[in-house]
Length: 243
Image (cartoon, rainbow, N blue to C red; front, top):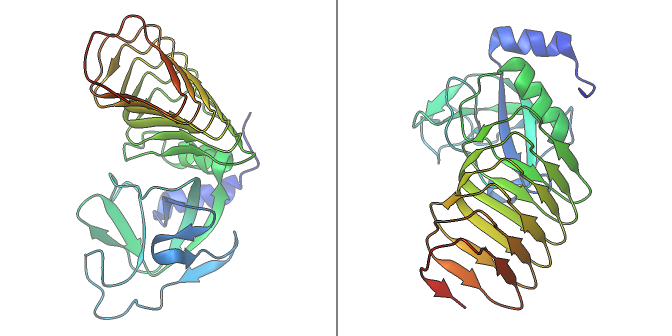
């Protein structure tokens, strides 16, 4: 079910291009910057005539069709309105002097799907404490999937993640169709079951009492198991096991 979005505003942003998506951690972004409450403008104090197409001369960063590919790690996904000059940095991100968070979590994903249904950037799928997210149509993620602190994250159609899948702190992560992923990471009592997964191109890690069930997995890089964790992967071919 769609969330409460302002479709008139989103139509305007779609036409103007004055938007991007970005992640932060508990309303704080790079350099411990405190992001303003939703609906309030953030203004970069370093923006000026010396601002260049780089990562150090000032600006707020995000992804949009004119610059996508890089997403800073975080546990809150946001859809933002932007204001002022847009500068493309390294062809994988956009920076602007001002932005305002319009939507977060489920609403942010829904807003992105409406404004840019063919988004091909690095899309982090993150569910933080108390959040329940469902993205029923998503089939591929260029980025990561992360659930923490008792969150519930369901992606029933997802088949491939180029980055990592991570569950921690009692989270519930449901990915029944996933067949290929970069890394798999479970820790702090989380339970992660990936029934269709056959290939992990990177590592598998289970820590701190986590339970990781991979009944179809046949191929992986390094496999790490320690601190009371359990991995059930009966089809996994012999390889490096680290404890």
